[in-house]
Image (cartoon, rainbow over all chains, first blue to last red):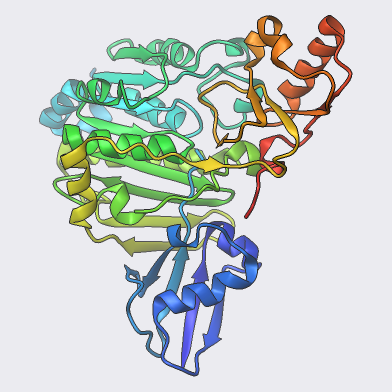
Length: 78
Length: 338
């Protein structure tokens, strides 16, 4: 099962890319995917980072093949 | 000839719409990279009453993006300089100059006087404050934020729509400013004009307002995205029941065994906590220098490393300090990342 993950703000920076396609072998929720993406980079305050699946905010949804996931950190510059 | 003729011609405006603009009251909180372009276009369009709220002064590093200001404005309060420049362009607009920071105490009484709030701020604490005060005053607000080359835009609390807390119920300590990351002036320029556009649509009652939606874009990749925001009624109820809930973005510094001297003003973000941090703003150094230890190393910091360098020069020259070390890159380089 393949999902596209889009990264924003400091998540994109930590990942070194704005987007990647991930292969998932077991059923995964959006929240689990978020942790899987963030944990290797030691990003702090992970609960502040919102997850959208197919443009709708929802962490609890179980991902399907072809889903588009976005990881959205808050930012405040102006 | 009417100065607004070209926009009155539009079906969405007309003489009725122009009257609505003239009677509208818009509060711009933060007259910086976002607030300057927004204020220019809203006043040019004939929005009758504009509040310009900012506690800061014009600095030379503002000029590349805060395009309302001129070299002759350096050192002037931003709200004053902005009102001067804007009045020259449209003398029919009434400007209220508010040289204060938004606080829990003054937020609601100021926002109550306006119809719509435009967020030109650069920190989480003030954004949550605007959000809560707007819920309590039942006013919509237009949000924008920047991280490097990325922008976020939305309208909150519009006709019972979602609030900022519905999008981000939890905040982060990583309040990274444009000063720290860098920014091209065109990004706040675009966002500020998009914010002004949302304000005009709300005043005119025409078009689709960006409520329940977060618009994201990246000026370098060209990527754009709209995310749907659902209302979290409990986040709004919480504010209605208990009033403004202050959000403290707290952080600590890398070493708890090291003396630090923070020479920034009390409103500057982020605010590190710890009893190893002395907080003495530049203006108070001369009267409070005796509070600074002389027998141990003290690391002196500000936002960028510039003011702290000046502080060290003053303390060494006037009061014989020889134990002070400048934090070259400013506070962001000494924040504890854990």
